[in-house]
Each structure stands twice: as C-alpha cells, then as structure tokens.
Amino acid sequence: MPTMELNKGDAEDSDYEEEVNIAMKKIESIVHTRKLLDFNGEKVPLTISLLGFDNKSFLGIKVVCYSPLFIKEQGFFFSVN
Image 1 (cartoon, helix red, strand yellow):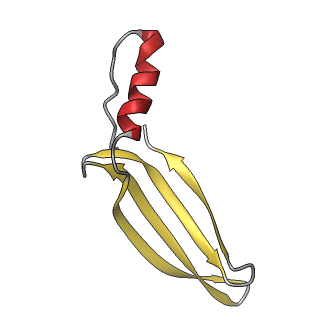
Image 2 (image 1 turned 90 degrees about the vertical axis):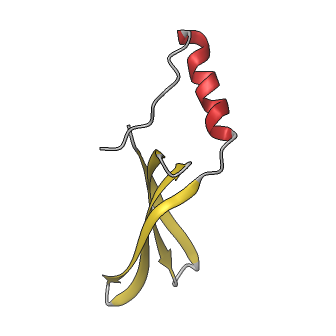
C-alpha cells in the first residue's frame, strides 16, 4: 500500500511542519477512473481518484458521484497511511 513519508522532527513541531509542506504543493489526481452506476434505475457518473503530489506521494482516495436530480456532487475521501 502506498505510504507518504512524514517529517520525524520534534513531536511538537512535526505535525505543523508536515501541514506546511503539503499546503505548498499542488495536489493532483495521480490516476482516476469513471464509471456509470445504476442507481434506482438511473445511470449516474461515479469518479474514483487517487490524489497526491509530485506523482509519488499519495494523500488519499476521493470518490464522487454526481446527482442529476439535485444537480450536485456528493462523495467521500479515504486517507492513505
């Protein structure tokens, strides 16, 4: 399973430093797939994306489904450790 190496500095500063390092990078979709999901007799688009930065550090998996009835996207995010 992909992992992201964390800065192992002082316990107090380490979390903050890692947040700053991630915030300064452009988060991109490393790979994604789109499928049509049959939901209550309707076809709705589903997109699954692996998000990360520098094409080698992974943050998590984003799953989004578009609802034409409500004209909005709904989804969730899984963190990758």
